[in-house]
Amino acid sequence: MASQSLGDPVTVHHRAQQLSCEQSFYYFAYGSCMCPVDLKRSLGESTHGYVVGPALLPGYRLGFFRRSQRRNCGVLDVIQDAEAQVHGVLYRLPWRLSACLDEREEGYCQQRVTVHCRGRCYPQTRTYTVVDKLYQEIAPNDWYSSVVLRGAWTCGLPEQYCWQLFHHIQRLQQRRSPDVWSRI
Image 1 (cartoon, rainbow, N blue to C red):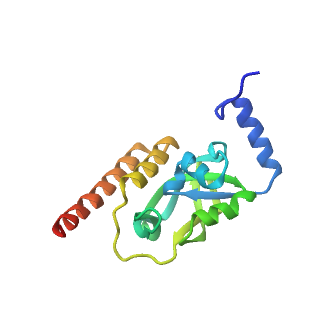
Image 2: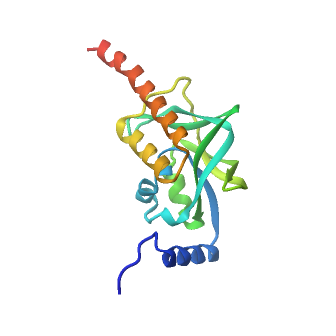
Image 3: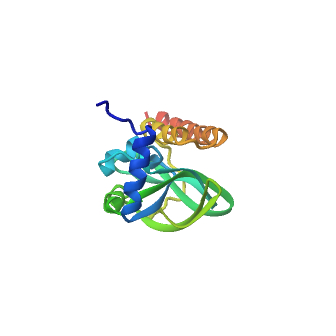
């Protein structure tokens, strides 16, 4: 008997049935967790089947307002801004993964937000925001940037948004370069 991939309709249907029998929560990811492959690393199981779709968080903007000690670079955060919106990925995760997600999001705190996905409104969706925000953005490293962009592209975020994110990262990294050279 051949094994079935995650994209196989039978497997996806089975996973949806299984999830409907267990408690779950909605999670809005806007940084490295948008990438199901990277999220699997922390949660210990494949998360492709838990992706609801690309989602929009109104009233917030994205920025690299935290320095990750583990990654040694700037990492993403969302901050309130009535004129902005953040694209990301909406997951419906089983409750049993909640503690692992909290552990991954060290330095962040849970926040409840309302997101829009595929024509529906999802109130009380979990996301995470930085506890001790920096006043100025810090450039991400290439590894973190590639994980974020891979997740955005893989999960179908708008192409224009992906390019805006790419150019924002590039500007931050270029701004960082002269500082590095001036110390040498």
